[in-house]
Image (cartoon, rainbow, N blue to C red; front, side, top):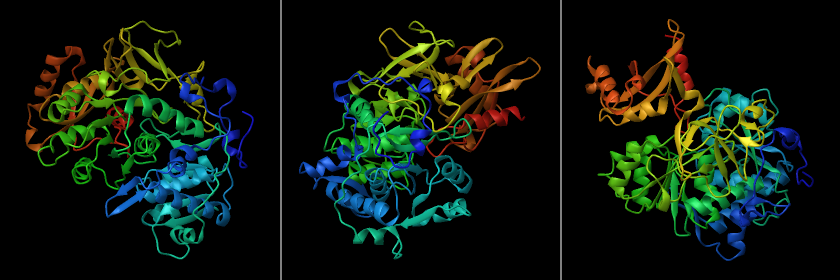
Length: 540
């Protein structure tokens, strides 16, 4: 890397060394990016510059309806506050804390306009989690929704971190400070390879990792998944459940719609029924959410009119084939399954509507290549199960983390998933590599057992892990099951579910133990925290 627009070089100086970096590929014609690039110029500014400022951009309950020009003005004014009043220099890390709101989106754009690095945090994170994030990213400034101040203040106690609130009428609040500023701002001339955001992994496997992404990464994700798979139209209204702090949410609810000139409905509360209600009220046409939400929404279709929906995207966990088929039967819409990661920014395997196959995640997204490797990094033939390996225009760049060498090897990204690929290039999920259970000499995929359980009409959710069996120096298959109703639990239920599994999958895969629980531990983004279930099973 040569040119940089950053004055604060912390992020740049803590990128992985060259030998640990992923090999980046820019195979599509649209991926010929200039050396100097600020992603906001394309994602937001160009719509105003090219006469589309009056078009709707961000919508929220309560009558909030911002045009592209409105968002542009607010982001410019905040950028002035950051630079002129708060002394933010290009390359500085700015923490953002808020629910999904137009003001959070404006702050995110303003941070990038000022050449700084956005560190957006999950609204439900508490003092301990926030302290870890701020220390890792070396944050010196935080912009925070008034309603979420308490935990942030506690996390900042004793540190020289300035907090500026917004959604407040206080005279020192961002809302007031920005009123005195010009609505014109000249973006900092960042480099395409300058870091634009630090995204923290959601903690499904323990200690979170900080993944860095550049201005070029943001546009590359739009030019790959956004253009070739999602294919949003300017008349689309997008909504969904993931927070903007989760890169699934950032792409689905901000990057892709705005790049396409479409609009986004941002919801502070986006549980399955909240989302169904919003779809019916606002006429949402594209939704992003997790498999567990689609399963829950199936039971609500008789109460809400969601006929405006034409596009559904699922990620975060594998989409059960039974949910895909039930949703298509009920709505006529095929769910676009996909696998992405915080480390890769967004989805890198997933097929467009015209080539979706039930039960398969999809093909490699244009711009990416994917293979199945053995443990030594050698390609495996179609049909064999191995480690998913990916290369493309984005890749893992951890902030000062020794785990970089686990994720990236010889230029390939290894997201930690076991997959198989068929002769047509479709990839089918088997398990997380740490969710493969070795039991009595057999390899069992936890998600495969989960899908068998989920077909049962009385099962709402299921998570399967390996439980140590010291007597045999192996593991047994254990399932944690949430039933649809407590009345379905009876002394013979365990055997009923075990027999049900044996009718669908090989008998040795059926769970030896089944424990009924009221809920599964999940991250804020909806992923099951199986490591907690493994710890619980091991402690028994």
